[in-house]
Length: 326
Ligand code: ADP
Ligand code: TRP
Image (cartoon, rainbow, N blue to C red; front, side, top):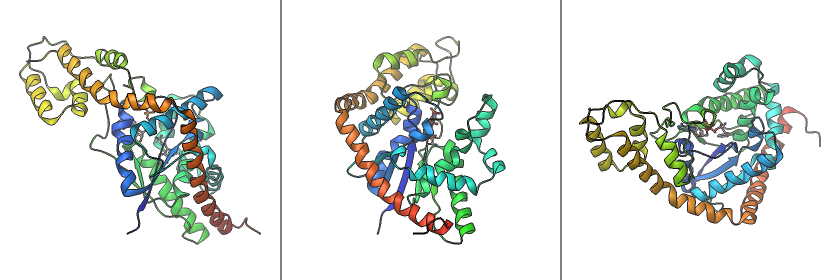
């Protein structure tokens, strides 16, 4: 049986955090064997957020190192950056011409930005069309993303359908989102959803110091130590769930319910467990970061392989829309 194709992307806009890991990146590694996997560094999406040459350069390299440190293997998968394949922006333009403003105004990401922001860039408004192009160029079957990206994948599906209908040919395959993990939303150190934009993250490659600082700053209730506590209402316990073996979690839960554990001890256990999990990843990352030439070669090679596929698809697109004359 031929393997199915998968594509996912992450914006290079700062250090990934454990929410990104449990919500999305963790599964990227496992899926490499089952699928023809394509992992993209969404640098043109990031341009909506970072408009500084050095910062964007560094963010792209950092995310590539992160991908490699987590175990994405350039021999198995295509790892590339969006800007190396111009066809993405070309196709996004074509999609813009068949998409209406009210349709894009319904996107959650746009609505959220509108609530927070005074001035939204056209790039932010259009984001779903560039993301649709990212996906549809590669005849993708599955798009593994966290819950919050589901709507964007639906936009890609709708856009594929609309394009195929208008131009009367099945040029694009309809992708499915694949919502990842049992952990739909990882809480941040303030109890809200962990997110770079809330400044409540624990970075995925954090040092022990950073882990300690982050965990120690998690707000807790002021009940005295020996009073029973509902673990489900405790922000520290919510994170224990990600980092404890099931037997240990069981014991912890009981100690909470019997009032046998204080916040300090609970936090100390959490710090130890997070560090045990992160330390090997951190070491691998440090090793890879010493060989930037290798990292750049991975991107260059991935870019060529992605481009070959995207070029072929764009030929078909230009043909059916009627701009290809020779
Ligand atoms: P952020 O909110 O920090 O900017 P992104 O929007 O860049 O994160 O998300 C990158 C990926 O990580 C997406 O697939 C998203 O669904 C997932 N993700 C982000 N935050 C969380 C979270 N707190 N819990 C689960 N998944 C998350
Ligand atoms: N929009 C995604 C995010 O913010 C990143 C992304 C860009 C993406 N293009 C993609 C994800 C294509 C999956 C497929 O997380």
